[in-house]
Amino acid sequence: MKLKWVFMVIAIAVVNLWAFHDFLQFPIRVSFLFVSLFFCTLIINYRGNKIINKILKWISASILGVVFVSVLSLSLAILSNMDGTYHEKEQYDYIVIFGDVVNGLEIPTRLSNRLEVGKAVYLKHGSTIIVTGGKGPGEYITEADAMKQYLVDKKIDSENILVEPLSKSTQQNLDFVKEIINGDFKETYPPHILMVSSDYHLFRINLLAQNLEMHFDTVPSDTPRDQFLQAFVREWFAIVKDLMYVIFK
Image (tube, rainbow, N blue to C red):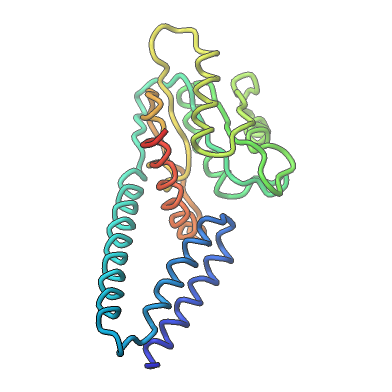
């Protein structure tokens, strides 16, 4: 085996160790493992069978092409939506703040960034706030309840905060929020909604909210630099899953 293949095997092992360390989601881990196993098969030397060698080269080139185009397309979609569509002079009926992982009872930086942006636009517009997020592993209370308490501690009137505590995904966030708004909004015109979440998350919110025919804008919060790569990669898989939902539902 040539030295370059040794380095390739080491690189594949390192990537998989990173994936299994940083990503808890089973589908992401399996995807990394599957792709790695495939490329490991290409290391096998098929000198005695030129047909198999050509087939493997064609398959590997095709897969690499599809992966490259997919990753590039998803990355451009995420990046092109990271600035949001918020207009300061617009009037919003609701400000929806999307939940994120809560460490026990503690609000981590990424979620507090979302809440601070939500608070800032609330102080400008005076809209009703909706906090959305259920209870995940390692969380003592729902994300929505933790978010409401954070905002109340920041002197936001609790009567202006609606809580959606059941959702487990972005799709459910939007489904349940739409139900709350439909039951709460009394005007005859369509409610104008401002969606607040981390910058990398806005493309997927756009995708799903448009599918629900919601009238909305988006505004980003900053993602901590040390979390951005992990969140960005995880978002690729989440977008693919939600695209399948939108296309085949």
